[in-house]
Length: 261
Image (cartoon, rainbow, N blue to C red):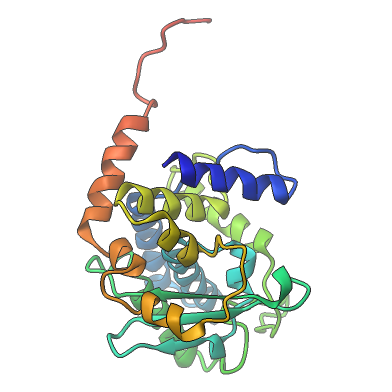
């Protein structure tokens, strides 16, 4: 696990961010978050608000299971996603020349037994909601922002917008521990470490590789493999491993050694 946290620290340093690990979001909190948002979605009458709720739950689930950077995931277009024969989804991120030298990052999202957190179900719910609201997403950014006039803008949403929404949802749940958008990436990395996924496989899934990826089909065969990273994240063992981690690191109910007041 130290190797994973070291990579996170190096990434933050490269981005001029203080080397402090983001508070991780794990499956248990993702489930509470998703349940809250979907509950509001079922009661929502405003088309714009319904679109935002559907988009946000799909974004948060995808962000966790991909381990992607928030800004990079917001740059994904609907054309970058294909359906796999297994029913899962394959994302083919192609970064522009000004962003990491035109590199690519592919990752697969498999269906998860727990439908509450399943990223594939979350994305399907989002697309179905957009279709019912007659919002055309073909060729657009996958998670577009809305305008003040209530229209869907065909541009990349700001990370700050989704982070503000995250904080709003967590505060409504009285479950805000200072998480940020980066918390999903941290939670994904720790989950992979706890489930014993080989470091190199996890780094490739999350996008922590420095070389370009010319061997497109070689990597494609790995991310589609049933024994790969996406399968590990979808397994029941992932939830158990994270529960053990949370128990060992939960100090909220521990008595203080020194009372200062």
